[in-house]
Length: 302
Image 1 (spheres, rainbow, N blue to C red):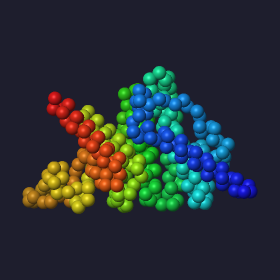
Image 2 (spheres, rainbow, N blue to C red):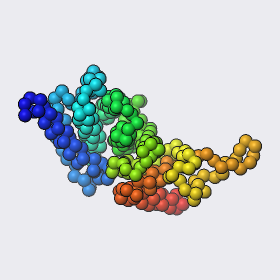
Image 3 (tube, rainbow, N blue to C red):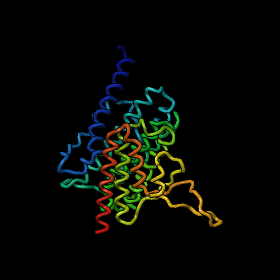
Image 4 (spheres, rainbow, N blue to C red):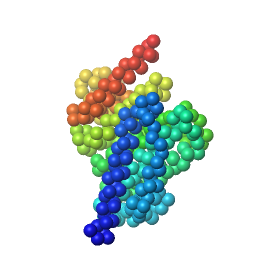
């Protein structure tokens, strides 16, 4: 194939391998098995990133070098795509490793949490330096935004009850912000492109945010309410009466509100309902969220 063909083959092979490994990580992550050591047998850390270093070579992104990202933004579309795929793999490995580090029987080094968060922030900045060169409002860009926040939500959720001991790392706040961001991004996706054709992973992102929001409501510290504009297809007339009362003008006369104010949990349920027409997983997720909501209501009444 020649030297150029060999390089291209290596890049494609590496991207394919990264994608396969990422999928094997994402599935137990999105289904919650990774958080349950009883149903998910934790794999040993094989340092896949190190083993791939020879294959990835100069095309693998190094978060310590901003100049490399600058170079990637001006490279060919194929190289950008391959770089982005490897970065998604990179983030997935970090999230997987930090979650498994808090499983029973594994020694936890809280310094690793700080290192993890710092790397994630650098990753985010570098990733969107690349994506913004192609347009930040594309469906793929919105998906990567959501995936990043989903990773943070999953990674820091186990640390909410563990003192991290770092003033700049507040797991509780990070999880709240990430859950809120996922719902806002999903709403933006619907406004721009509709939710009829989305990645099959997005229902899991939204459901996770909804379940986290529901847990916070039970603690009396809910996420911020969502405002949906009048005429939004997520809302019908019956839901208008259920979720929003009639507003009153400055002159004391009843007036039709220009937006609906609903809880983050309800918003997640409505987004899942919108996706359920084309994604069975969304329908299942909406049902799971509804059942969890009913259980929460019964516990509060009891």
